[in-house]
Length: 239
Image (cartoon, rainbow, N blue to C red; front, side, top):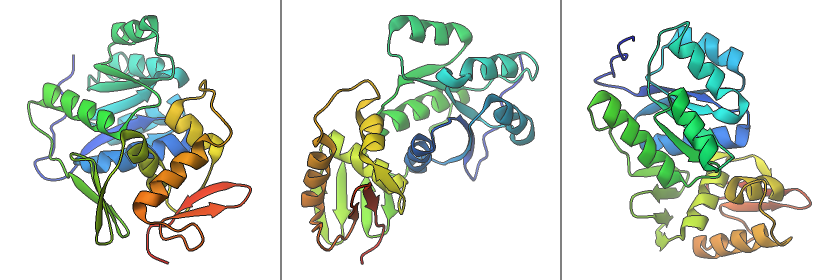
């Protein structure tokens, strides 16, 4: 078994992310900004294999539904590289989770997930493997918005507000993809999962609620703009 790579005393821990969904990958990268992590995302096992040898990450976040198990086997066999692995899956049954643990993952999360859970689990496996507490940046900024993940508080300009867990997850999805139009279906899948059946205006209702707390007038959007017939776009600065 190989030794763990040394965590840098100053600077971020390297995290290899195997995900083939750009929206989800952006959420992961944005959320891990709360810790001292540098993420690099690959959409296929072959691309990830090349990055493993070149970059030598400290941790891995692997989508088991697109070949995470094969990449893990490659790490354990050909590379003799044993690093902490947080697995992702869209199948929440016990059999899938037990199979992932049998393959050697350290923890597993079901998609969709909350930002707080992702940070907590990544911190936990880092601490267990390296014996050190990662640095936490409780507040991250996107334009005029400050997001406090510990206290679930948001500051928009001079106003401080409290969001529900679902509203905070919605804000993360939009902010992580700032400037990009997200369709209602994309938001639905990211928040509730692909198998969830909801009313046609479910996403619109939650966007309206978030806008109200952000004091965002859809006629003159400060943070969330409506793209007619397409979806919503996050604006990171005042307009």
